[in-house]
Length: 372
Image 1 (cartoon, rainbow, N blue to C red):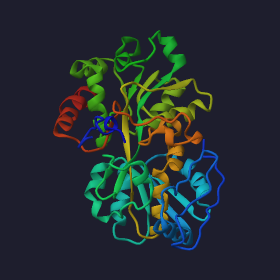
Image 2 (cartoon, rainbow, N blue to C red):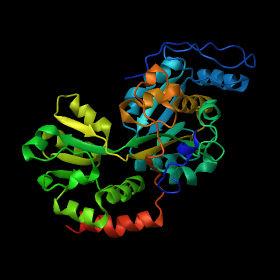
Image 3 (cartoon, one colour):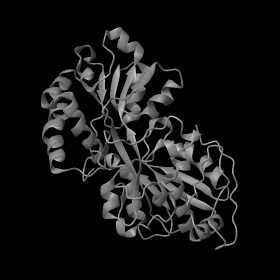
Image 4 (tube, rainbow, N blue to C red):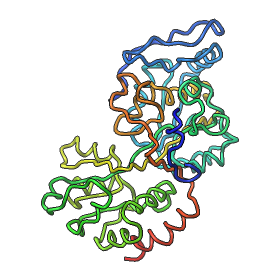
């Protein structure tokens, strides 16, 4: 990773078209050479850089035949299994989706048990940090080959940043025109008087990563003065998340909603709704982290974690606007259009600094939530 990449701003402590491939693993006897797979049409081999020890893990993973992923990304259940199966046809991937809070609570309940998740991805780095002792180090070749020396690999490779989901604005293009509002191109464009009573926000209560998002967004809005202007527009509060907000924007119930995810907006746009997702710069991305959390399918867990961190998995994850920690150059044609987490992207990690926590409790909440 470049020095500029390593130096990007973080919050806290410093802070997804399926992959159309057709390949079959050629597994030779253990110890007879590196585990390899035929190159895909995009030139991506998730085992690239693996040695005889890695080949043995892949062989054992195929014998296990199943791997379970708990994911906080609501798109993973639809996009990952078929793509992973194309690379590893002998291993069935089961994906269970939970919101981050419910996911970590489930992981806590399963701690020490023999069932449940093998691998997990979610946004709370505080959880990863507190549970590092129960995580099996990620053993595959992807980290040393593509993320060697990266500040986004933690401990002794126990967990790593896998993606950043940039939040933006959902806009009903018809309603925006009816209101005579100006196009939304910046954070401050959200403060225009034409949007009064036609704006929705997700306050993010209870989600440290979302609270960090508001800490940064408020700076772009103009600090306390910007929050006061926003409150004067009487924004509708969406405490249950981005999907209800995007649905109301799509229906015209409100004209603009933020923050929003591209996935929730694009799903409605695909059904014919006059809605668009607008990224706003500088981007604020919700960080997603991956680790091996279970012992039921230990080898298949290693294969999945490595695949998700390799160009093969990142080419799938990066569809739909998710940012990748890898250089798009290594993703091949399957990663066309992928964008990297660059130094100007702020990645939340869910570890609130005292300043961020104080801002959210004493400024954001009183102004936008409890004070109206």
